[in-house]
Length: 82
Image 1 (tube, rainbow, N blue to C red):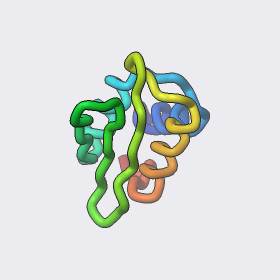
Image 2 (image 1 turned 90 degrees about the horizontal axis):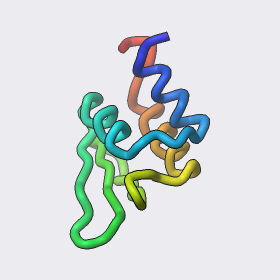
Image 3 (image 1 turned 120 degrees about the vertical axis):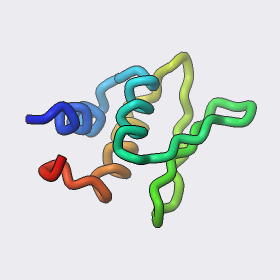
Image 4 (image 1 turned 90 degrees about the vertical axis):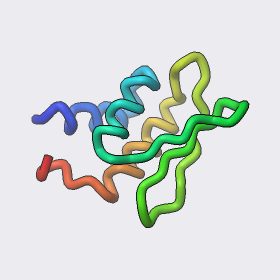
């Protein structure tokens, strides 16, 4: 199992990964992460998909949002090709 598969699986299972590691994973996949403008809600963009808004507090996201990020990525990333 690749490192990418492990991280995606951890997200899908709702693991509490630090936001900085999630951002690094997203950016390595070509996903654009927009910093909040005064608040705590980051936006995640993939071409051709409605942006996903993620609230980040104390450098972490809630498990439900980790699952949403994994679902968001799984529609566009072929894990076996990585």
